[in-house]
Length: 101
Image (cartoon, rainbow, N blue to C red; front, side, top):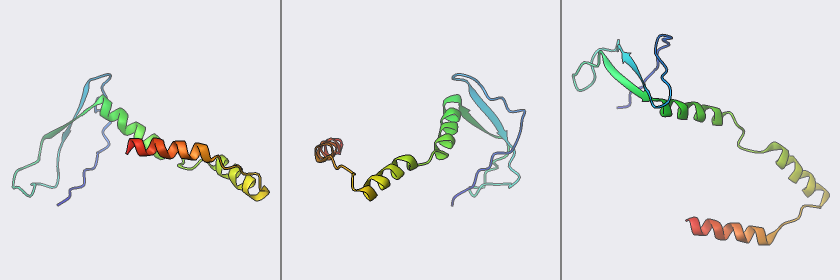
């Protein structure tokens, strides 16, 4: 059974710096876990590296996956009939990909 974990807004939680660890005391209002054990007072620790990684993931999620300017450039070249296909470059990249796999 999946359990949703929500982070309560608490400005008093220290954020830590460098390799320090942040700790947050969790006061579960839900009562008991399916195992019958109480989850009141459990502690979750997150390293600063994990917090930085989370921030990085959020930032990257906002970056567009497609370079719109490049797409427009290719569309224009195709419409004008000036788009050049570099078969050597395609072959090199396919070979590089094959080596990685």
